[in-house]
Amino acid sequence: DAKTTQPPSMDCAEGRAANLPCNHSTISGNEYVYWYRQIHSQGPQYIIHGLKNNETNEMASLIITEDRKSSTLILPHATLRDTAVYYCIVRVKLPASGNTGKLIFGQGTTLQVKP
Amino acid sequence: DSGVTQTPKHLITATGQRVTLRCSPRSGDLSVYWYQQSLDQGLQFLIHYYNGEERAKGNILERFSAQQFPDLHSELNLSSLELGDSALYFCASSVEARGSADTQYFGPGTRLTVL
Image 1 (spheres, each protein chain N blue to C red):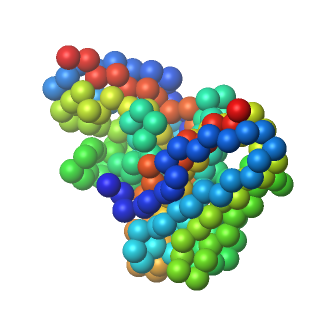
Image 2: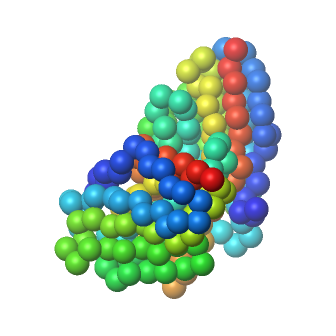
């Protein structure tokens, strides 16, 4: 699985957009970009994933560059409840016979949303 | 609420002891993953079971073992406990059937303290 690089921490004002970058320069053609977050010591929570097109759901938007070497997770209107550690993970998408969907977590980005 | 349940929530025990952590996946999910989160190592993948069979192993110690039962719940057994085994243990479940999403849903975790 490709390795990812994220800034260790970021601040964002409440109500503003939070843009969290991730570098994955060694990503393979069949690997997707996944984002999870962990609020305090709760179980990680899935946010969004994508291959090469921009994706949007009720939680966030994911912008992947054309060369797929980096991506940005966008929380359009950050709230205090979005304060968490955000993890960018790259791996193949399942199902594929015999494969594992194990997630390899890096250190992530600690996002602090401030009032 | 992710639909994944873990018991117990907290566990305090002594060095040298053995404990069993239990995970009930979401209804219909065939895969169960176990992860360990310690302060110095972050979130680490331990082991993956799919429909009762071991599919992948990560950095799981020989003192640790797991299994997935016919009803798809899983247990993680930790023996000869050491102080360094103190951590949060998460399980996650995923459908991983053809045509479905492969999102992992995490449980609330079991906090293990070894004294």
